[in-house]
Image: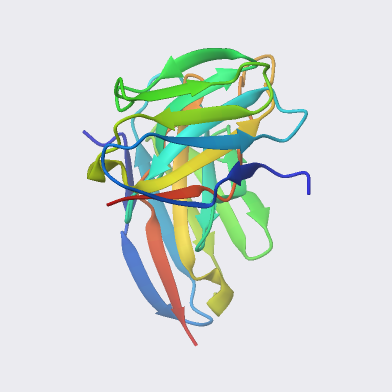
Length: 118
Length: 109
């Protein structure tokens, strides 16, 4: 399977615990995005990487959230001291960078990690 | 304030009907607009629109962009039950895309 993969698919945790999610993008894609989606809403942008550089972080991303992409391949998203409001689907997407006028291309999404904070 | 407004938020029609989904947006440094279909899983890509007035088609689906009016529509003709899904509009702002809340479409057999 050469698509975007995410692990785990489901995570149930108690409030206050730390959780870490992993995303493996399509191998030739140099851009990787993290989104959060709650019921009835579209995906909300959290952060994105170009290769190993984290180029932008949303205001939604509190200090409890941190993302890394150390070798420019897979990425991890960690949430510290989870709160019930963190319960959501966390989606990862990857794309290849286009040069020229349009600097992004179609984003391919992974299956998501559904987080439930009790 | 919402940068992307989709309407209607939900729609129920009978199989065979034609539907039009609307998306208005207000983003800075706009480059293109994407449409995605989301069933009970991750969004799947439908279209990317970059130029005004040029219709993109894929089977029974078509879409067009109006960059002057900051508006896009997605048409689905001869709807089928398999078209039931949430349709997401996502204009690009700088190097990222901003999603609307989506239109939930339900097709009755």
